[in-house]
Image (cartoon, rainbow, N blue to C red; front, side, top):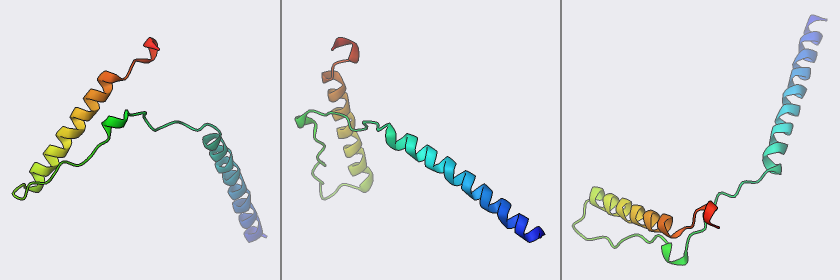
Amino acid sequence: MRAVLGVLSLLIALVVVGLLVKKQLGVVSAAPVKLQAQLPADAALALPPVAPGDTPQQQSQRIQQQIRQTLESTLQQAPLPDEQ
């Protein structure tokens, strides 16, 4: 009898957790969020050419610098939401 009540209480707890998960997943899928930023066509990120003597650190720094420059130019071009 004790084992049956233990199993039954575990099943009830599992059903409650399942309902909560279903409810949370329904909320997430019902409210899609637009995560992609609209970048101008000329703001595409292309990896810089690799010089034969460059170390991985130099390559990484060059890529970081290019991304930073692209991001800054994109932010300067993009209008603020208040200006639209």
